[in-house]
Image (tube, rainbow, N blue to C red; front, side, top):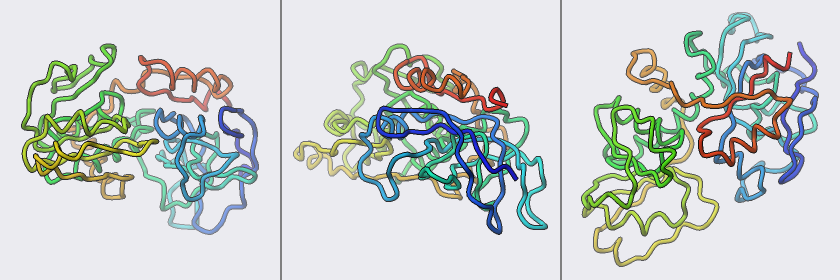
Length: 313
C-alpha cells in the first residue's frame, strides 16, 4: 500500500501548495485509489481558498480540497471487494495524516471506505469527475414539486441541470448574464435575463449563488410557484416580502446529492439519455496547480478545470 500521497493543500486562506502527505493506516473495508484526474470546483473550493466559506462542521486548515476524482483501485478491501484496477469515482477522502479531508479528492492517492466509491465505465474517461456535480444537479432538479422551467446560471452545474431536465422529459430556459457563457446549449434556450419577459414560471431553479437573486426572480414566478435554491450562498439570502406575498411563493433549498441521485445519473448515462460532454474545458498538471486554480476561479471561459495526476507520475 502507498504510504504517501501527493496532494493539493490549502494551508490557510489564500495560500495553496502541492506537497506529499502521509496516508493513514488502511482499515477494514478501505481501498486505495490511484487518481487519474480530479476536478476543481468554482463554488465550494473558491470559498475555501478565499476563506469565505461559512462555518461548516469539520472545516479548518490545512485541508485537501476537492470532491471530484476518478481513478483505479490500487489496493483492495477484503476478499469479495472491488477487484484491483476497477475504475471508480471518489467523492473525497479523509485519509490524510496532518491535513483535514472534509473534501479531500485533489491528490494522487486516496484512502477511502469501499462503500463510498462508485464504479464507472471506462468509456466515460475523465468526464467521470463530473458525476458528483451531475448528481447534485439531479438532486436540485428533483427538489421541486415539478421540473424547473427556468434555471439561473449556465456554468457547469446549470448546464448539467438543463440537460437532466431534458432527459426527464422537460425543457428549461436558462438565464445567463455573461455573454461568453450563453453558447453550448444542448436542446434548450439560453437568454439574457433582461430579454425574458415571461411572468409565469412554475418552478425556478437557481444555481447562481447570488444571495440577492430572489428579488430578481419574484416578478417572473407564477402565482403559487416555487423557487429552488441550489447555489451555495456566502451571504444571507434576503428578499422583499410584498412581491413574494402577492405570488404566494414557495422556497425550497436543495442540499448535497444522495446515493439515489448518483444511481439515477449513472442510469441516465448508461441509457444514453444524458451526456457529460463539452464541460471539461481546461486541463493542467498538479505541478501547475496555483495557475490552474487561478484560471478556474477567474477565467469565464473555464467551465471546469481538471488536474491530470497521471502527469505527476
